[in-house]
Structures are given as structure tokens and as C-alpha cells.
Amino acid sequence: MIDSSFIVAITQIIISLITYYKKLMSLRGILLANMFGLIVFYFGGLSAFFTMIIFFVLAEISTYIGRLENKEKHERRDIFNIIGNGLPAVMAIAFGYKPAFFGAMAAALSDTMSSELGMMTKISPRLITNPKKIVKIGTDGGITLEGTLCGLIGAIIIASTYFFLIEKNIIAFVIITVAGVFGSIIDSILGAELENRKLIDNNSVNFLAVLSAAVFAQTMFNHFI
Image (cartoon, rainbow, N blue to C red; front, side, top):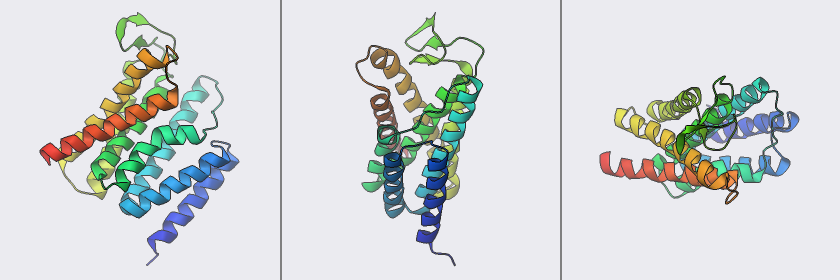
């Protein structure tokens, strides 16, 4: 039987080479992402590690499709992008809060799919804090029906990984899904209220939104499971 550590090492090498070749992430970002991956594997095992891989792959695909549709260049992610989207999940798994980890991952993927694929809409977004206000595509805090549905799908994907890899518990599935959507909504609200006013940047918004989803998921697990 192939050792799990070998599987993790090969997976990280392959993804790192592709990421570097495609210029999807800076070298420092790649090193930090690999470190996060090893921490997640050490504390959460293969199930948590591959959940993070699923997030990364689908997030990159969503970004590629969304930017291609709008003829925008894919940004090269740096360590601050990695910290904003990944640190809450890494902290959660390191301290033994597995539900919080999956809630954080659900929010990160939900927000990414909602934001990136939502830019493909032909209908102008509306500001989440003021639905009567129509804003330009790509405006922080702008939401669309298509983007919201994409975000829901992202949350369901992560909830499904928990369901099939950890435990087949429908309540846990629902909690993680709701946590993902909740985090995405928080991201939009913070974007509309704080990022648009230049009070905080996008990475800070991501961190706070993903952290809120982690706390929400863990709290719900503690009460209902």
C-alpha cells in the first residue's frame, strides 16, 4: 500500500510545478501554500488535505473561467491571498476543530466561485447592503442570482467532501453548506461597507469572512451534533 505521506508529497510537487509554470502564484505563495498543506495533512489527515486541494483546483478553474469571459488576466496570487483564504482553516484544524475547518473551506470556495463565476452574468449586480442600487460587475459587495447560486454550489461541494470522507451525517452536511454561504454573504457585506471605503483590503475581507464561517460551523456542530 502506498504511504499517505508519499501521496501528499507527489500531489504537492505536481500542483506546485503547474502553479509555477502557469504563473498562478508567486514563489513565496507556493511555499506558504505547501506549508499550509502539510499542516492540514499532519493534523487532519488525507481527508482534510484533499479537501484543501479540491478548494484550490476549483478556485483556480473558477478564476480562469471568470477572467476568460471578461478578458481579464489571471492575477498571480501571493502570500496575502493564501493567508486571507487559508489561515482560518489551517488554524482550525491545528487546534482540533475539524467542523470549523470544513466551514472555512466551504466559505472560501463559495466566495471564490460566487465572485469569479458571478462576473459572467449579463445582468448588472446589486449592492448587497442596498439591493435597489445597481453597480458595475466586479464591484465589492455586488451580488447576482447567478453568483449566489455558484456560491451555494461551492459550499455544497465542500459539505459533500465532509459527508463522504468524514461521516454521512445530513445535519453536518447542512451546517457546512450554510456556513459556506454565510461566509460568502459576510464577505459581500464587508466588501460593500469596508473595502469600498478603503478601510480594509480584499485579503482582510476574505480572512474575516472565512473566519466567521469557521466559528459558525463549529458553534452549530457543538449545539446540534
